[in-house]
Length: 460
Image (cartoon, rainbow, N blue to C red; front, side):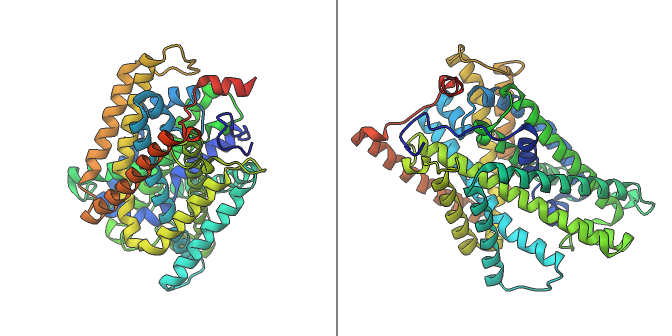
């Protein structure tokens, strides 16, 4: 198990279907409580419509993933799909861009958890150094937890997601049914016009990235592979409906001008209506949403790095698995990089990188969807437990949707965002060419490409 050069070093199946659903749904829902004011600043009450649109737009992409994940159920997800379908360079690009998304959102979530804790414990102000140190502490706690067997992490995730879903749906429905809810607060519905709404919808794509935890962790799924499509679809729509209920409930209770000035929205409205106890409960659920996102994305990022190390496109040592069955070197790599970004980036820069993630994730979606169609032609003999409808047509549609997402979000990225992304890509290019040089000079570093036969051999 400890040999990072063995292509059969596969992670053991340990995660049941409900726990996998909780992993993905929790990652999607994320810090909706602390981001709600920002969402309303983008487009006002129409943000609720944006979530419906995004979930619908995601459907062709989910269909493509639905075919790819059961066919190549290995850690690494999109990296594996693009590598097998579109070649070495494209596979690397997809993996590297996806890593940017994971790490930047993880780094953003650390301080967000502290800000939510600040609200919960009524701490009026904290210094930047305290914020940074406590955010690092949160990241380290989850890294230590995920160093051990993933089963414990999955149980914690399930409990937190159950809490946040129950509280979120109950509160949202209570607001919608409250006599104080008024359609007058929904005017103007599109505060930034139709163009602003389109940009907001593109940015909201970043909130649905969490379903990607499923392809990254498919190697550890302990249920029939053909059910992966249903799990991804359910995760996206459970989160989308929650977002709609909560955002529309908030929008009708208070005007947009009031919402954008709050640190958190739903707890403050609940406090005015029902007193301090609901305020505490909702804030606890809100903290749980952030923690579930940190947990799921840390696991997903770790599996991506592990897969690229196992394939020898990153240093093979990153493909190491510890005695608990966890890819520990990859985990500590993600932990260290996330901490460095938290220390040096600051909250404003992290907000910028979240916007760039919409662009990079759109590119990842486009290339991954295209891979689904190409693999149909390239390897028609590969077993496909689930076959997407329309074949190449669905793959092309998914590709178009991904490109549309990326293009729509371009205008929201400030110059500093492009500079940071360019620096990151240059660093990636340096690593890519270094590893290519190693493969030419040392046989040990020859690239390893997994195929369906590998998982079949493991299952025998």
